[in-house]
Length: 436
Image (cartoon, rainbow, N blue to C red; front, side, top):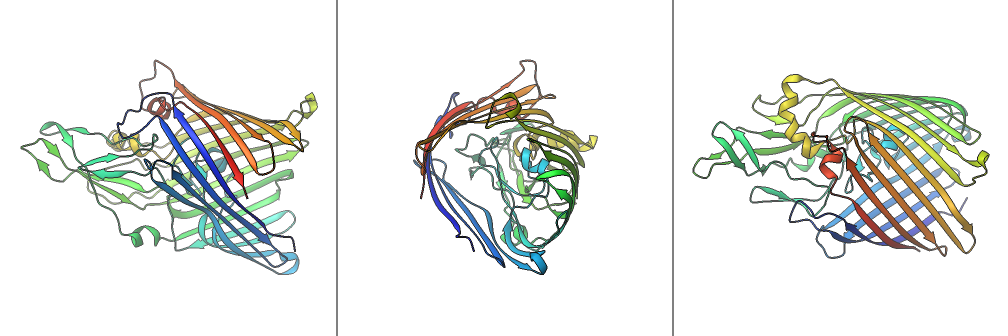
């Protein structure tokens, strides 16, 4: 039995945004402490894992986030442990496409930072059969934990958040009486109405992803990981003040989702091609309600990763990727949902090409220096994102970080896409972490 892996990490990070915030409740400077506890243990018959994270604002302006990506226990049964039964919250390889792009189709996300989402596992019972070149798995659950997004408060009909990735819904609306101010009311569902939801999923794989050709497919009927937003417009209207008071109703909706992927790994190269189809179940609401879009959507994705060893450049890898999202739009509902989608969009991109480079610049017993560069370009929106980071590890326990994120969009772009909305969130950051 190997000794369990266990660590406690503390990180202090300072982030400086280069543009003034649009919302007066947001800031240019953020100081945060990140705490992570990690445990993994395995023997011949069991294995278990705990991954717990906390994000705390030093000055208290943004509050705190508690994140639990994984917490599970697995029992192994049968000859060569071919049957594995897992109970808990576990990240599972349902889709490499969904994991790479951080879409949150299959597994929920922590989205406190929209351009760096963190995957979290589904919670329930997993049963997995593993052979040398063939695997099957099933998942059932009656417990649902949705995405975690930016913290916000509702005060006097307006939503406020210190998080730079939160955008307020419209403060004015055109209704029968003309242009009116909007003061929202939030109708929160009971906790049981959110978490007491059923899920069912199946997954299978042929081949081994470490070497040679492989193929996998998955299907699920489960809640959409993002809470659906519906707005009841049949609400109070204060005529004397020209103020509309619509109600916001977060709710759980279900979807069918299926994914098929094929790939190859070998000789310093790995690649995959993916197709995903999602069909949400529309809630039955009055025609006077507006809601974020729930359209059947198809996704195509491709990824190629390779090393540069053949060119004499060691410990360096390049990744090329592509994403295409196609929605089957309902013309009657598209215009109604556009205002809701601008603040509560599930998917950030429409058609994106991506490039990433990772390199271990210095690898010595006394220090390590690594770098990473990532670039995304949205063809339909004509906007892009450039990310770069540098890490310096002088000793085993210490790591220093430095990086920046820059977004831009074409001057001719008039839509309300992701880069258009958040092009003011260019930033630089630095920090230090220590692992016990």
